[in-house]
Image 1: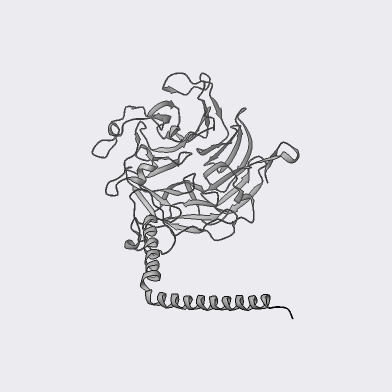
Image 2: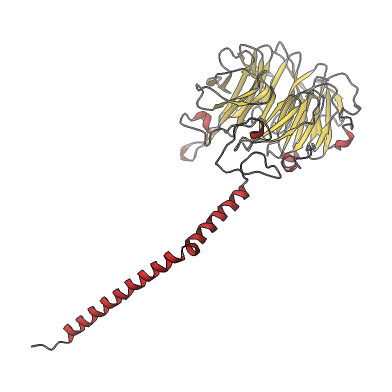
Length: 473
């Protein structure tokens, strides 16, 4: 089930693009996967209702869904769709969810805190509590080096994963950047291509979309733990574009309606913004005027508007080649759009308001019925010190930790190496030094055997010599 490019024996198979969608009703299934261009349903997963910004693919082997209003995350093996889903229990209801592209970490928003788990061990590595209200959206950069969080407190925080993992456990890790130019809760964010050089688009109920670059943390948050005075008093929503490396604000676009969803194409030529009235606005970043802050005027700014949804747009996603746009809405439909003409190519009716809709390249495990995950999911701890707070202790296996984190009862990799070295030295010492008496006896036995063999060899030599040298009769 792949698209084939070229011909003959040198043909190369291009990965299939699929749409993955969830709605809040979950009457027929919790999640559905359909082929992007034909609309054919490929897979469905049952069990629970996935919440907004709560769907993630883990290492190309598992599909994770944060359950709406529940304190657990459902996990399905991609090919075993009819199984009862596994449950990752959490300390509270999960408001948003993401995984690192490397497949090593799971990140979840629970109330105003961010929980970071290590997938290989299930250890809870750190709890970040720098938001002052519920975390509404989370996303990693493409290289997993950074992640960005947005909350109902109007703040967007950019975090360095390395700094978070290596921080002193006695001190709360600090974000690399704090962006506080929005004046109402954050509704969505999108990390572009480029890892630590990526640009981040943020959307808010304040009718703005922003694209940032670096701002000193101290200038953004007051010592009392509240947002610093906001420089943008505008009551209208505007998406914003930021730069992770520098933290500076690159662009702030003002709209006439609240912006509920935002995304960019892979080349970052266009930014798409979903409005509370059902409209989808396309901002051309290449031809945008030089102003850093500006109102969106389609007829003046080479912008386009996609019209068709009857209620607010909740999620947006663009195909790899940038030609197709996928949108989900509270009007209980998912629509596929041709970006060039703004025409709706297909409308899929669901049973409830759409909570997640995204385009992805189908992993091999999704298309192969014989595929099974390389490793089972571990038990995920709910507390930093699992055994002291009721989590079951686990034994065996190899634990690899980064930085200063030594949670849990299991020894680290280096500790296990030292233990193994000690056992080997002890065994060697007992074998060579501790058993000297047995060794002397064995050596004596071997020496006697060698003497016997030498005598036999000498006797055979003498006998052969006598036979050979005996005179003929």
